Image (tube, rainbow, N blue to C red; front, side):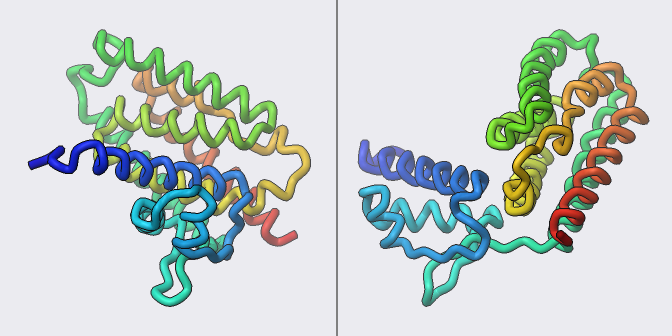
Length: 233
């Protein structure tokens, strides 16, 4: 039955998540660059832990598309091409449009501003949006990524469904992993990062889906144009 492993199993599970989170942050910060190879033993020694939770964490990250597993050489950070980025942006746009369709199919207003549950939860999502927007305007990429991922997960959970939220989170994470290898080369990111988070929340709270779709279309087009330009330089 669950829990029979006692504190040992809990500790290992916690270590697994902590290591996965730490390595994901290293990739997003650009400190573990695309193509970088490493072994379970190397990471275990770096963090001073046993190999088992490290191997499990690396397998988790490989399942998320951040790492590639090589049976003989260990793991390496996945290298995304511009074509990959284009495909990810297209996919996440389809998932977001699915979220919009959930709102459109809700004539009773269960996902609208008249619902007290939605109104209360939306206040938290909007605070996340404001933090992401401030970071984007300031050009603080590290802070933006953290708030952006949390914003989209909470927004999708509020206006979509848990399955859409999980899938969108994975796509947003992959798009950031692909983008950071180019964005980190810029000395000043002010004016380059999308900052329409609050505008999108407000449009959804008004149930103004044409405006919401327009905001996302502009976001996707601008993001893709920026990465394509940086990759070509």
